Amino acid sequence: MKRTCKISRPKRHTLATAWASTLALMLTAPLTIASLQPPEPLREAARQFLQQQLPTVIAEDVELSIGRLDPRLRLTLCQNKPTAFLPPGARLRGKLTVGLRCDSPKPWTIYIQASIRIFSDVVAAAYPLRRGTQITAADLIIVRQETTNRLQGYFSKSKNVIGKMLDRGMNAGQLFTPRRLSPPLLVRRGDKVTIFASLGGLKVRVNGTALKDAARGQKLSVRNTRSKRIIQAIAVDPGIVQVRM
Image (cartoon, rainbow, N blue to C red; front, side, top):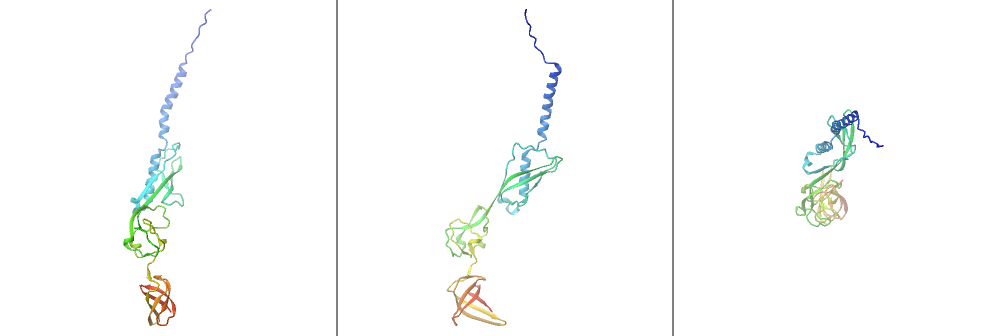
């Protein structure tokens, strides 16, 4: 007795359902992708925001970079332009974070890493300089360096350095900072000075000898040439000290 094997055929309604499901996926998949927020416009919004925050005087001296978003991030497409902001305490230099907020019906907030590097023309030593040097134009060069994290400050103009006294030695190429410099000396130890004093309408001038270096406004000891007395005075001009009565 022969056995016959029947091959079952899928029912027509089953095939129709499968094709309908496939077609539905094909139609809805693009809509799902289109409803997601693309990352590049967000990065560009963060860049434009930071550029607007930077002072225009240094805009050309800034290197601005924006980090990339996590590719796994799925954000609903923002119907309005996202609002960029800086978290409290953020500084416009070095590494920082920029916030982007969407106020659409499905709101969201994200943060993007960014970096701001600032470059400036700064005054540096042309060659090794010793402590106590009074700076001249020949001692200086202008170099371009990154100044993003220079907390001690720097000078961008030579005129702010020329004439000042160097408090510590420097190597060639080192930057001048406010901590390295002191006001120029008006009087040096051993200099012959004029001692000026006034009381009411009475004015007295006598000669003396400085016993200490002094810049403008600094106190120093001087010896009266005639009386040999040592008195305290204040440097007011080159070679001139004043006694306050």
